[in-house]
Length: 363
Ligand code: NAD
View (tube, rainbow, N blue to C red):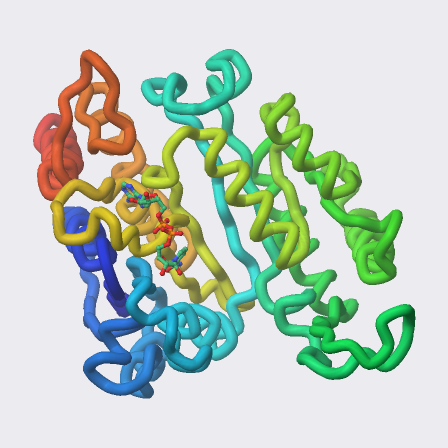
């Protein structure tokens, strides 16, 4: 098994180091190779996704990714900005299905801005289509407005589009994921206004007929945004397009209190995947040794489960994370009165200790 390790910028290097440490105590045979990505790659090689990094990612079974970006790159031409590396990896690896679980750990219920009873036990999975929609649709650009009340005025435009195969494949992913959970899928659209999303709804409904054991509901995106904060536990698997998924997955992330706890996976048709925390490079806390590494460690667990076929090892990591939370260890972002504040490295060490302790107890 080969893992491409791409730490990236800001806290990326700090949190990925902890995830690598955790992977190394699992007694599995990995080959791990590290490469530059993002701003650091631009500084060293003149491009946020250098050829060598892309080659490594393509050859690997999975990519463990930290985060990219820093304000200092904001003035670069768009193609050289660190975030382009993520889009390039998604495009080149054909990563079309983004899994963002939002799980509220019992010990962190108070960290949510919602009432504890609304989020206690929360476990939802947002599946976002990653390669289509208004983010990639052509044509796009700026021009003089050709018609309407402001004809001749400068305007900008993007194009929202989805093809049938794109919708079908993400719908299959959602229904199959639901089969491993509570067999419910909510498809989120804006079919009342947008042609693209009436088509989305029709195609998801058709695919759903192949999964009679899974209950399918449809919800407009504005209502979904409301229901996520009103009664989030009513959802199980949510499937939606690229833009709605981008927004709703961040909203769902906040239900759990800290973005520092949330892993994510982006998969292609052959289960090759990119695994990264849901948060960014946090330049405000980079280098201070206080970032929460748990989202990245949990992303490594998702990697073991989805791409490397090691579900038992994934369980061990997830169980170790629960153990350290139960011990009262907290990084600053999830700290509260009565718990012990630890830094990035100490948190990683605690997860390693929880894994090795269990191994010793078992043997
Ligand atoms: P961010 O997620 O980096 O940070 C938002 C806030 O959350 C900050 O206050 C930060 O300190 C905190 N935070 C994030 N992760 C944390 C962790 N693990 N532990 C503790 N606190 C944490 O978002 P931002 O500030 O909007 O963006 C910073 C940079 O990251 C930008 O350049 C942005 O483009 C980039 N970004 C990259 C990705 C990615 O690599 N996938 C995703 C989002 C943003």
